[in-house]
Length: 66
Image: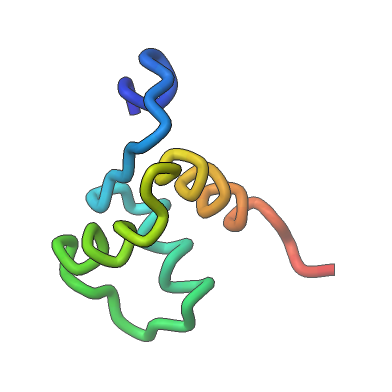
């Protein structure tokens, strides 16, 4: 998170972050969490903007259904 928010790096993804894990499970409809290494490989598709993807994933957890 230091690299994202303090250093403003645009391409950071933290597969150990529980919020990101929960958001990915919710958005992609996964019943079980893949290994962290697979999450990191999955996030490669968002390069070079993985920080932006992370922000959107976190925000998705804050939205209550209407």
